[in-house]
Amino acid sequence: MVKVSINRYVSRRFEKVRDEAERGIGKLRMRMMGDLEEIFRVAGKIVKGEIRHQRIDGKMVRITPLQRQKWLEVATCVAETIRDIAENIDEKELKARLRQIEELIESAKVSS
Image (cartoon, rainbow, N blue to C red; front, side, top):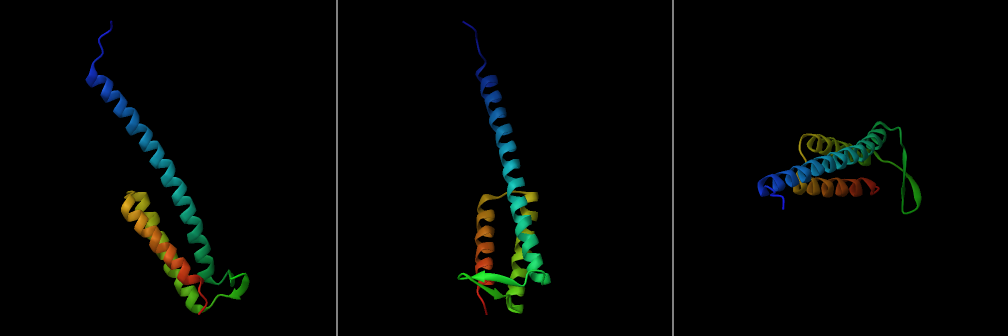
């Protein structure tokens, strides 16, 4: 029977788990940042006036200046979130930030 070092066995398994987690988190981070960058681009187009209408309750309505201001808040929050994800991904903070973005987007949709 071959003797196996438990310390070595556990260390190798831990290294494998850590490496897989790093790759998984890296992929997740890149996907999230890509999606958030797309939201940022669209919000920027709305703020600049390149997109002038949005669909609300099945109807195309003009985007008001107040809504453009709210979309600017969306873009700002998304940019901060992208920066935070690039620096460090803290799950609790990220979930809170995503809820905040969702609320901002919903408030920007409402015609005023």
